[in-house]
Each structure stands twice: as structure tokens, then as C-alpha cells.
Figure 1: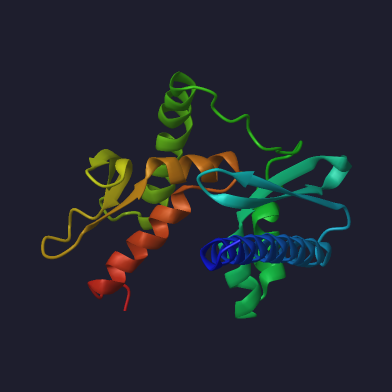
Figure 2 (figure 1 turned 30 degrees about the horizontal axis):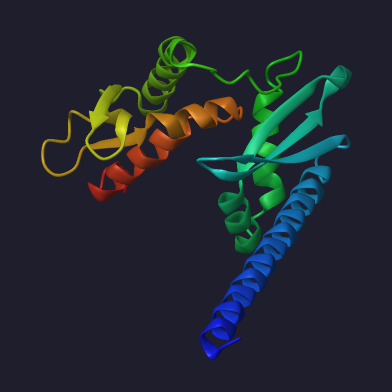
Length: 212
């Protein structure tokens, strides 16, 4: 065996060890975040069950199922990055996570995760019949009586997007756009996709000094 062969084997071994260490580190991270989420929700609810899923486009997603009155189950999903950010911020992560379930519990009878769309036709029905009208209603209610522009559009970089903005702003940026696929995954995790737009629209208002 020559030096070149030895070096190749050493590199392969090193890469293999690094991959194993990386996978082990990720597994420990997922366990820790899952546990922290469980503990946080147990501060507000007695019966909490959690699971970790891996979505190809979004990475690990943490699904928690909480029992409310009459043992009705309410389910909600969270992304790894947002949970890590919330836990590290120290700004009441338990209250923040619980707020999603408190909102869901306004609907009596439980609310489990909706069935995901299995093809383009089902996705279109979900977008046209649920996502679009829900977002338009939420935005108009949030910013009433301010006139609002809202609807589907196309972005050369991100593809189909939901676009919203303020026609009354005539100079500078007056529109935000969120990729439709991101809004759909929020909907399928029992998260309100309109919150993505509302937060961005408040940023626009702040940039123009409208909420000072």
C-alpha cells in the first residue's frame, strides 16, 4: 500500500467519522428540542404527545397533539429553526407555543392536522377554497379600514406567491410576497398562513412611519 492509498483511506475515514458525528449531533439536537417543546406545553396542558417528522423541503418538523375539553385533540406543527430561536431568546417560549393551541381550541370538537394535498388538483382546491379566502379575510380585518391589495401572483425567483400590500403607499416598497408552498405547509401544520403576510405588512408600515 503506497502513501497515496493510505491518504485516500484516511480522508474517507475522516469524512465518515465527521458524517457520523454530524448525524449523532443532529439526533441529540432533535431530542433536546422535542423534549423542550414537550416541557413547555406541559406548563399549560396536561395531556401532550409529540412527534418529529422530516419534510424534504423544510427539514425536521415537530408535531404536538394536545387534548382539550372532552378529550378533543388539537394538533399543531413547528419548524426546528423557529423553536431553537424561541428557546434561546428566553421570551416565554411556553406561552408562545401554547398560544397556537389556545387559538385552535376556539373551535370546539378538536382540530387535527388536515390531510395534505396528494396532487396538483387537490393543492389547487386547497389554495382556491381555503388559503386565499382565509388570508384575504384575515388581512382585511387586521388592517381595516385601510384599503388592501391581496391575491396570487408570480415571482421569477420563487414561482407562485401570495402578494399583499397597501395601495395608499405610492412611494417606495408597498408590497410583500410569500411563496405559496411556504403558506401551504403552514396551513397543513394548523398554522395561520396569513400571519406571514401580516408580519411583513407591519414591516412595510413601519418603514413608512405609519405606525409611529
